[in-house]
Picture 1 (cartoon, one colour):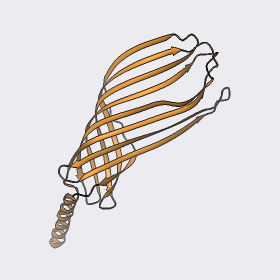
Picture 2 (cartoon, rainbow, N blue to C red; picture 1 turned 180 degrees about the vertical axis):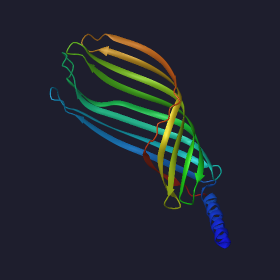
Picture 3 (tube, rainbow, N blue to C red; picture 1 turned 90 degrees about the vertical axis):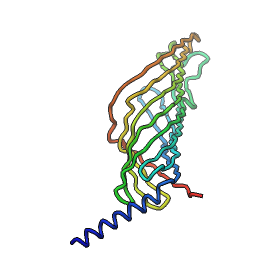
Picture 4 (cartoon, rainbow, N blue to C red; picture 1 turned 90 degrees about the horizontal axis):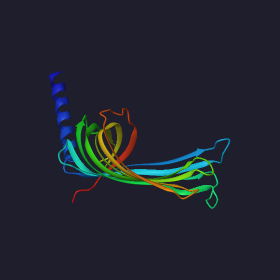
Length: 229
């Protein structure tokens, strides 16, 4: 029995040693992406179609076998074909891009490796983002309003996930939960009534402290380890 326990301990130590050799000092690229389509077909008005995509890329490095740091880049875009009340000289449908966004972040991750294939990670992150949105508020033929919104966001959060290594260079990653307890948002809104071309502008600064955790948060991604020189 003692020999079996000793052998199991040696195997565990060797496995951790192999994992450290595989990760420490390695650079990696992780990515997630999504595409969405939607269709609204009410009985008393025309159909509205929407589409969009979003992706996030992490570029990082394992400083030790259990810690990694890096940068995050994100981008999103949305569009639609929607109908609105007819105003003289204004088309009744809008077809095109109505929103896009960009983001840049810094992350720190701390890992718990259970074996050479599976583990968990968690850590804080800081992010800076910009988003543009354009929409129409349909209040009737004489009250259609076009609104453009430019928003800048600075946020601090925490995220957690899991990984599974299926080859030497490829991992599958999955999110488990996240929290964005602190954020500051500045937005500039320009509105125009299409019937009389009257305009309205506003600027808003909002902040929040909300220490809530979104759990579970399910999302899958891939991670590729670059070959060291």
